[in-house]
Image 1 (cartoon, rainbow, N blue to C red):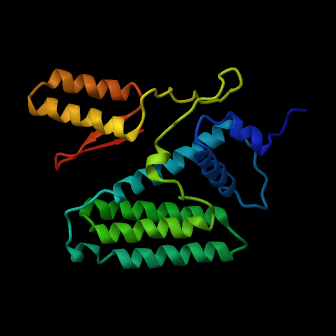
Image 2: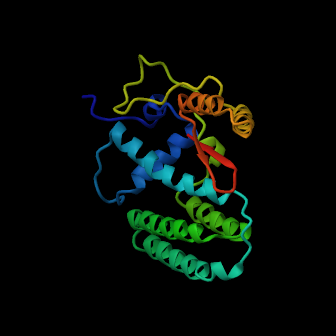
Image 3: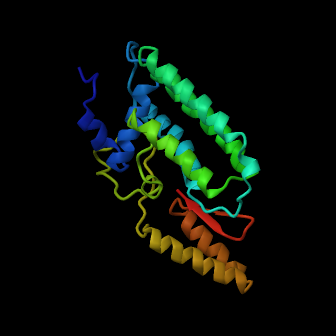
Length: 224
């Protein structure tokens, strides 16, 4: 009747790496309790990937070096870690209540975002990132490298793909090394007050879905 999908077909239809599609599929399936029914759609997978984007955006910021070493700013971290671990354990003990477990992850993410605004040391960031990865491994989540998550390396046959959401543009030159080279070119142009060239480089990257974020300390972060 054409009213079902195989796992193989889902991966064949996806324009993303297998690791990204795998985590997106897991997140979608885990968002509903295993005793409940759910209806699969391409849109639902894209929504799951968008939810994971929020986590990987945080992971990207946690991997960035920090000049902040003041420990007194981290006095609220330990209670947040304990609260998250307790809620996650309770959810798993509650008949594998995966939606509640994901809610614990999302609450933890929101709290960590608030702490980041105040400033965190590199050691604190490492602890937080390790917590996400360790507890996420239980569900098969948060195991993809940040650089890999934001890198799309292939586009399937457009005659086969029929996604409800348009697939991302093909990136011809997308290596991290090439992107860093463009950022350095832009930095040099801005130093020379050649803002026309700098804007042109930003637009060239934006056309390939590479977004630049200039930070207050003078560095530039990029993501897709």
